[in-house]
Image 1: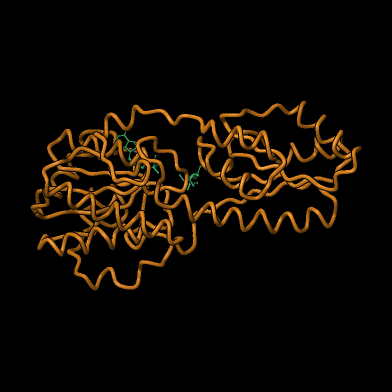
Image 2 (image 1 turned 90 degrees about the vertical axis):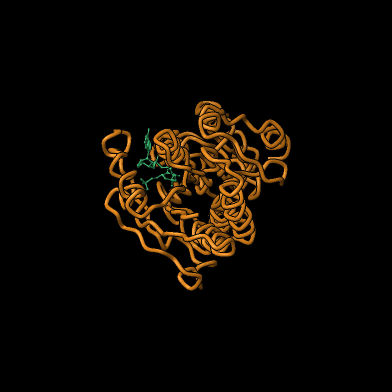
Length: 317
Ligand code: ADP
Ligand code: F6P
């Protein structure tokens, strides 16, 4: 087969490990594999190169994506996608592996409807793809967030402060829920839990009066202005309060072993599926087994709240 591979949307640690797995698995099958630079934008512009084994050496432990990534909103227009299809035809590429989040999956689905054999691989720190238990990049971002929150705890407890820490996740609360739980945060707020500001202020005031030295609050992005919230906490509760937005640091760094393993399994599986003639789908893991789901179904699936972990937070935070 002649297979293209691209990364698209927000980068995530472990994308390189997926690219490596795809390229090496394809070459092991005597396929030709083409690295496409800068996502769908690069595809439209014809920025692609045939890859050898050596082209993916020394990248397994590197963050970011050697292929580069981009956002091309115009890809929703059929005329723009036709340019991409034309490029693939020019190089006689019949199949495309698209690594990214749900926007990337949407692009892959549309290309599939135009006759290209596509497979999506979940590469995003947000863990917001309902058709897989975990996305590549989540484990590393979680580890980065935990390291940062542990450090913030040190200074927060020394100064008897309240620390509000905003983590990424777009509209998915997993990074906040998992990092908050792993770091023993007193409060975790996500889209699923909502934010009851009045209750938080009252609780903090009571805790302060009861002599609790400090408090850690972990909150998902896009919920509130955390700097303003810190001011309100300081005005009302008696705690000095500081807000920290962890930001893009969560997107970088060497992938964890969990992300590398997931990347290797999913990259190889995507190539296997193409050889079995299964396309228009995305790969993932469920209860640690490899699965695939038609992309149109995957895009309709909703992330269910994690009842077990949310209950656990209520009990032990
Ligand atoms: P992610 O893949 O991380 O969710 P984005 O939502 O930014 O990131 O999507 C990545 C890219 O996928 C977009 O820049 C665009 O090129 C493509 N894409 C997103 N939505 C669509 C759509 N409805 N139709 C075609 N392509 C899309
Ligand atoms: O999807 C990954 C992510 O980092 C989200 O967590 C965040 O909301 C978004 O991308 C930020 O996107 P940008 O790179 O366009 O600022």
